[in-house]
Length: 349
Image (cartoon, rainbow, N blue to C red):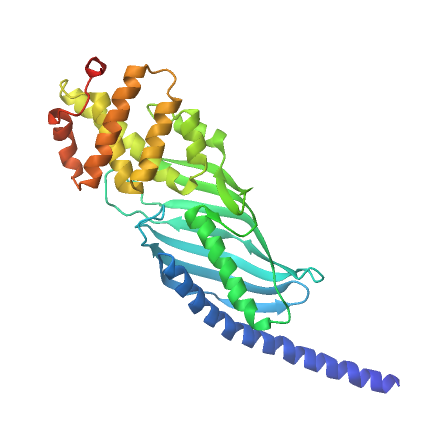
């Protein structure tokens, strides 16, 4: 009996070892196929994938499957996405998929050491002069999903869909899957590196990336005109737009101030608002540009109703200039000559 048991254990160990290494080979092949599938799915959503790879994959009970040293490079090409035109590079130390609760058929994915670097586009003077890019560092990610174990062929597409959702959360700021996540956003503004923390909140059927409002308030102190609370609230819900938006705001303030210093006839406030709205529209489209300029006016409690009327009018004109395809170099001349531009509150009726 003892001899039979020993033989059985040896056979079990050999079979288990074969299964372990066999599972690794199968996982590797399946994972390569999943990368192609995932890349195609992401590209259908307006994100071009240039390169996607991983170093190794292993399977251990009860931890599940773990992929190590993953990398992804690509570009956001769809105009409607907040990072349209930006190239990005994603690296992950580990990506694990495993079982959470067998009875509930509940599985999970965990991510360690995730970083997203958003490259600069070099299209305007307000871009990051340091060329370091905007860096999204994720300390912790966990996403849960249900899976029918009687349909094993669906596991790779399921995990691929979750990875796609995670990419959507990081690049678009939201996804439909329940997610636990926290980290930091690091970027350059006024030649300084600044940082704000973020986490995920569940809102209805979506997981939404939210920036820390206190951090945003501190960062806005770097601007000539600080953000008001309405602006901070809106920006906290659009984290991936924050670096470029703050750089645009600072740039418009500096350019208008410099133009007025050179020529006292230049209406600094009017030029600042027209240029600001113009650049926001070029960068993010008219809808979001309208939202942020409206938030600026709603939260500007220190200004008079005449100031608000003048600024709102000039913001509209700035959006119009952008939609008509005018060049930035033309904006100052238009501000000086366009009769629709309100250059002083004395013109407000």
